[in-house]
Amino acid sequence: MQRRDFNEYKKNLGNKAAEFVKSGMVIGLGTGSTVYYFVEALGKKVAKEKLDIVGITTSNKTKEHASSLNIPLKSLDEVDSIDLTIDGADEVSNDFHGIKGGGGALLFEKLVASNSKKTVWIIEDSKRVKALGKYPLPVEVVKYGSEKLFQKLEKRGYKPTWRLTDSGNNFLTDDDNYIIDLHLRRISSPHEFSRELIGLVGVVEHGLFLDTVDTVIVGSKGEIEIIDTQVGKN
Image (cartoon, rainbow, N blue to C red; front, side, top):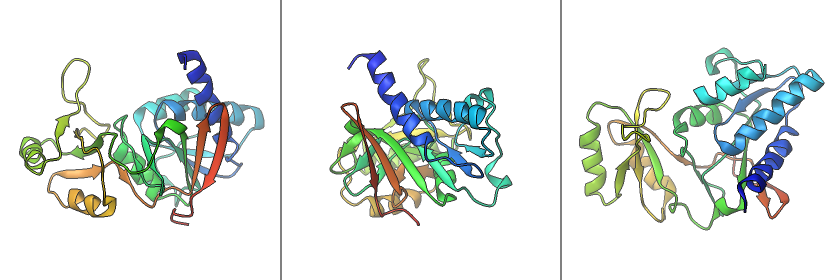
């Protein structure tokens, strides 16, 4: 698929996701290349329909984008709850668990999702998998002692690599932490692995998003499928 066609494909997904937004809602705004088009569509909808909404962003990049489109914004601590969060995912299993954090925003994405009444993911069909793990699993870690933590993950056979910038420096999250990517190929017990990782001292958060999503909007060969997962919180 040519880049222009692929971008049009993502634009269609973003437009479909914007249809879920109604006036009066507090909306969680995700991060990523597909969500970019949702934020674009939402900005146009706010301007055209004069929607009374508030956006809660999951990254500095999304905050800058939404602000440029005059979408009203607040911080997570300024609202009681979030009605709807729309975000992307790097990988979604057949039982609707996900890996997120390819863009480095996993901590804020999980904070927003965990405070949302409903979560929607918008993805291309290529991101559907039988079981999680082919996509590297991001683990956000504090800087202090991170080399020791890296070694521990290496000894456990999780094949860690540092997330680096194009210039070769350690990638820094919006919360000024490092990311270690785990190359696992397959995660047979996601809930058990989630507990193992979060129990390691120095781990801030990981990219396993389990029992989170209520609806998945999937783009496939020019068509869009909307799947109610029945595994979300509500």
